[in-house]
Image: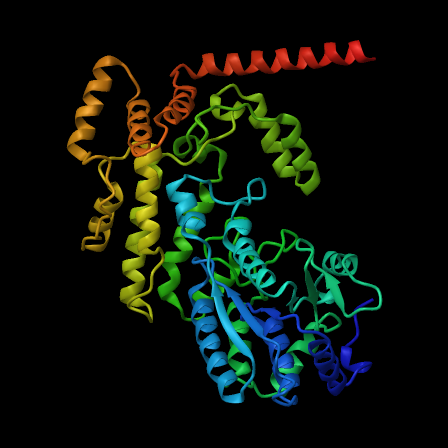
Length: 509
């Protein structure tokens, strides 16, 4: 049975009264999750209007509006959110409301491009959805923890609705506090959640937005047009792992590969934003890397730990059954029946060659959208990310050539200022010498490079003996070249472990 409009049982004035009641009940600051979509806009506008009726003496409690910029958001959404936050900040000061806006971003070490191109993480998938925690959850968590540390407790206000889905309704009900309008936070004990839109349905949201003027000077009909052009739904501020991916028809990250197709980006392009086509092409190329055959040419066999690992057949099949995809089950069965290394080993990070090639394409796309798009300064990747990628390539992948800077100059037609933190002056000439010596002595060049990096990093230590632990870590990585021999050893180890477990079970039975 479809949910009924909240306004059949409650008047708008009653909703405003509830918001004012919750606000005045204590001194705990509010943290509003604002994504720029319809639900969070409706929630913020309701709160704004309700609190505007209070006297200056009553407006003592701080309200922090936070928005998350993953650094790979759809450019149209970034533009809208940035403009909206500026208008909110200005309007709040004029109205003497205790409201401030905050744009939270991932730390550079956790950014999408640093993880994907620097560390070689594969494009996110249902099997390895590493992006949500790093790009969204941690940012909101840091802000919440900071305010809880400052005030003792805090209230997170979200635009979530029970009408969104059955699972959303169950989750909201799970954390409800009997007799209270607040719910427990799923993660932080000193944090509570308030959801003023909990009983709204989609029609209620749009009816309110289109019938009530926006208090910070935006035009809600522009928001409606954005949805219509993209045929999209809102991607909420993510505060826990239960929030679904924002792909398909939802506004979200333009690089999202968790879903099969980004229809919102495609529809936006079809509606006249042709300058965004390079983004769609890059996203599709990342999606294509998930193909099992393509993976063989662009993924390492060694993992970032330096080890190789056999595929856990039971986990793969269990995952397949959970998501109920016959096609996935068939692919897994086919994969496990083959004998090539990529069928029995857990794939490692993207190869260095792939990372270099994709970085060049990314920078060329950046140059193109600066020429054809609305913002000649638009960045698809930040300079800080480029420096961090180069640092990782140098320390973990033996790249003394500073390839990032070479690629940048080639793609952008200008030089990027290099960091002066080099490895005792080692550069491309030294790398060529090292490669020649290692090849002559049949020693992996990356092994020697990593050992030199360890020694360089240990300079200045009070106890130089600590370097031996790091040296052992490098030496204990898998450096053999005979993959079949490695697989045979891994299978023997697995069989020995299984046999030992069976013997232990028999002894304890």
